[in-house]
Amino acid sequence: MNELPVSEADLQAYADGRLPEERRSAVEAWLAARPEEAERVTAYRRLAHEVRAAYETMLSDPVPARLARAASPRPQWRRMAVAAGWVVLGIAIGAPVGWHVRPERTVTQLVPDNAVIARRAAIAHATYSPEVRHPVEVGADDEQHLIAWLSKRVGVKLRAPKLEEAGMSLVGGRLLPGDNGPVAQFMYQSQNGRRLTLYVRTEASRNRETAFRYARENNVGVFYWIDREVGYALASADLSKDELLRLANLVYKKLEP
Amino acid sequence: MDEAKRLVELIPRLRRYARALVGERSSADDLVQDTLERAWAKLHLYRRGTDLRAWLFTVMHNVHVNRVRATRSSDPLEEEMPELAQRGTQSDALLVRDLDRAVARLPADQRAVLLLVTLEEMSYEQVARTLGIPIGTVMSRLSRAREKLRAMMLGQSPSAKLTLVK
Image 1: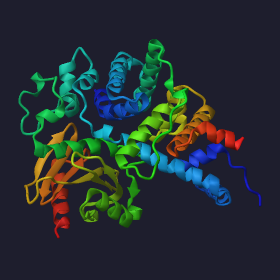
Image 2: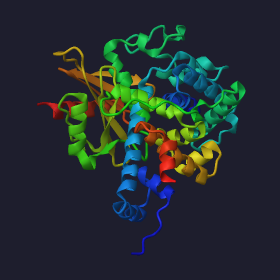
Image 3: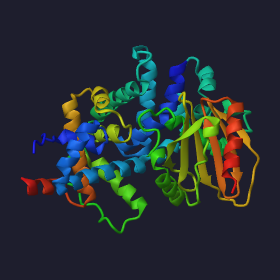
């Protein structure tokens, strides 16, 4: 009866999921009576999702050396390069010698293949773990859907291990572009806000198992391993190496068939 | 220095936005490079503790506007464009290509707003500050951008849709 007027700005904010609760219900009621408008808003949401997906590969694209250099102040650029770490020049894991004499190269060329997962996982961690409003695409409250969706896209049956006994609870997950197809990222968080991400991708060469390996990419620590057709990388910028190792063991145990 | 680290961390996001904004990878990286260089030159103007990302996107916006002005590149986006391929039979890759082209056809002002809201997930207030426009303008540009994009992806021109409505 006493319908509040709904503005175009309300509809945009509604499409972006940014309306406060009470306003949202008002807009929903308004839309319920107007199927054409409802369809338009649905299309906006779908387009937003598609636009994000369309440009997502840029986030994991190796940063060209010229940009890495531009991000460093000229006068003390060497010192800064050390501080700025992997993106600047690409410190190869296992081959850290000589990186500073070849500033022209991009990261990929220096990193051995099996360490790429660690770098990708670290980049993904550095990109999404600081997010306050949108750390994940699908939240843990919809875990079933999250697992089903990511399993389908990544192409293997995934599980998000329960890490409550280590004080980490699942925040949710998202789909990322990877070198050999889509990759899943699960995000966990402790009560005091420390974050951990589990990066899961399929491996091209099957029937391979590796021990845990550790890499430190900038300020992100990563334990990574391959278990048959699946590669895992557990990353955190907030945990010590020992804490991360304990969690990696727990994850490994929980993922045992 | 913390800013240096953050700056490096933000490069992938700057590149994503620039790529969507200018439509082509190497000019996008040129824009990012100019932005980073300018950011270093102007770092003393950045207030510590405030949002470095927002500041950096403001720098990028200003650099972009100056570049467009300098090259006097006419905005090709207001021109009539042929329709995009029909939906339905498209693969994901085609959808991405069509979307990219549709985004490129948006008027530059509207495109910037749409991308900051959609890709960077900035609040409307942040977008207003970043682009130096009133929030009402943010909302109207967002609305127009989305409607154009929707129409293009439906394979019909937005102006045709408008004449229908009026």
